[in-house]
Image 1 (tube, helix red, strand yellow):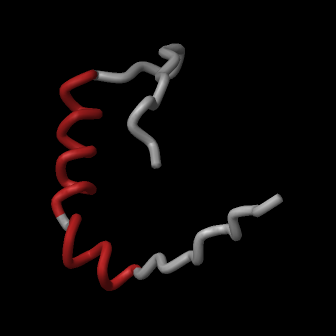
Image 2 (cartoon, rainbow, N blue to C red):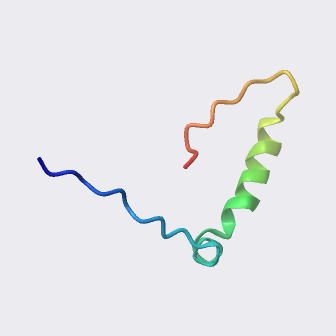
Image 3 (cartoon, rainbow, N blue to C red):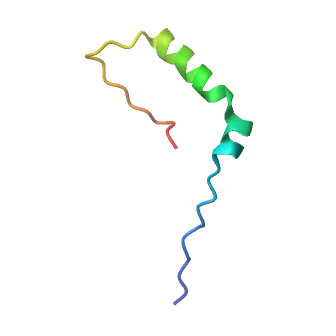
Length: 48
């Protein structure tokens, strides 16, 4: 029986910064828009 080997972890902070530098700015704007309160519960379905 064949088994699949786990995929290599090729995460790179430099590659992320180059490809997704907009994410922190966008996330900040979204959180401000949501006006999250201390008692609110957030379900993050886009985490990765």
